[in-house]
Image 1 (cartoon, rainbow, N blue to C red):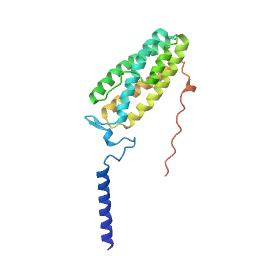
Image 2 (tube, rainbow, N blue to C red):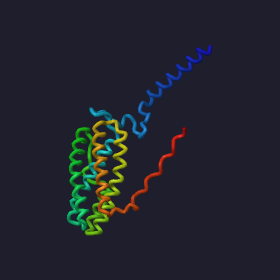
Image 3 (tube, one colour):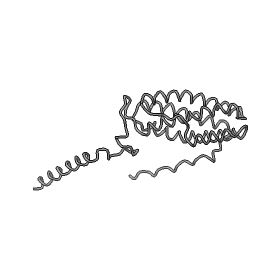
Image 4 (spheres, helix red, strand yellow):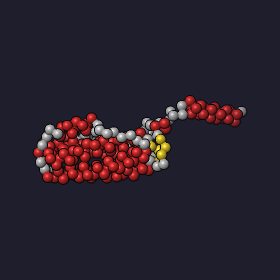
Length: 205
């Protein structure tokens, strides 16, 4: 009798499980909150929302850092700020060529204008010259690189797409290089940077 009851219970569980998948096949979410429907298959692996957002962020970084690095040649007062501006513009020109080629291959649309924050920073810098420009240049760009570094690092760590992973590695290296260059100007106000989030609690054992 007990064997019959066990078999009946197992049959119920199987039927219930099949019913759930029939009713809501996309109800199971990934750890990022994206459903299977949000991913597309490519030759280099699944392409998800975070991967697409990463390409957009790299594109937008170039859209404001290239002209800003060039602008520094006329408005900066410090020779070091001018040198850093040239390097940022050169690196982002190369990175922009790469991101546009990869986005076209993966069928990801890219923006043609900087985001609203970036446009605000560009407008602000356009009103400054000399030492005032140097300080604002270093602070705004260092802040921006810190934000994009977090996004790129997360994609590099978790993407399922091999081409995105390889490009994220390149982007991580460039962002790290640029943060170091900006800090070398001696103009960055570290006290104004966002405080790192507290560490997550240790998992229970």
